[in-house]
Image (cartoon, rainbow, N blue to C red; front, side, top):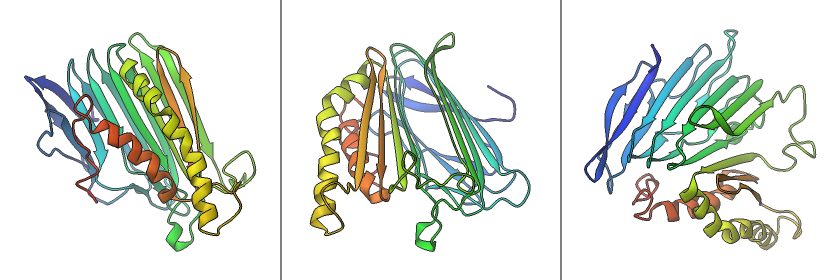
Length: 288
C-alpha cells in the first residue's frame, strides 16, 4: 500500500466477499453497502461533488484470492475549471489475485469548460482472474452548451500480468483549442465515448457470447436515427467496434451522439453481469 493513498482491500469470507481494508482521505469517501449475492460493493464519493484545481487523488485496489468486487462511483466525475494550479489528477493502481473478479464501472468523466484533467490506471490481473473495466467520457455540460470546452484531458491505461507482462497499454490526449475534436478521424459527429476492457478467460467468453448483439447496435442505431427523422440510414446514433486478443481479452469501443445513445451497450453488458456466475445482481437497478 502506498503512503498517503486511498486504499481498499477485498477478501473472500466463506461465500461472501467483504471489504477488509478501507482507508480514505478527504475529499474521497468510500461507501460500502452490504454485499449482494456474495459480491462486495464499493462506491467512490467526493465531499466536494467533483475534482477542483490542484486535486491529486491516488487509490489502491486489492482483490484477494477468490473475491468479487463491484467498484463504482456515486455520480459522474465532474472536473471543475482550472484556476492556475495545473488542473487535477486521479491515479488508480489495482491488483487482482487468483480467481478474483472486479467489475469497475465509474460514472462518466465530465470535464467542465476550462478544466484540465489527467487520469492514470494500472491494473495487474492474475491469469485466473477477470477484470471488466468501463471508461466513459462525456464532452462536458452539454445542457449548458459546454461541448469539448475543456482545456486539456489526458488518460493512460496499463493492464499487465504479474511480473509486469503487458496486455494493454493505451494513451489518449485532447486539447480542443489546439485540435478540433469534430474533425473526421477524431470524434466527428459523435460526442460521448465509452471503452470497455474485458480481461481474462471468463471475460473473453462473455465477449464472444455478446459479440453479435453488440455489433448489431450499429444497425439499431442507424434504424433509430432514421425513424426519428434525424438523418439518413448512414447517420448512425451509435458506432461500436470490438477487438480481441485470443486467450487474453477484448476491447469494446463505442461512440454516440450523447450518453443515451450508448446506454443500450451499457445495459446489455450489465444484463449478463447480473447472472450468478458474475456479480449476481445489477447494481444499476437500484440507482434509476
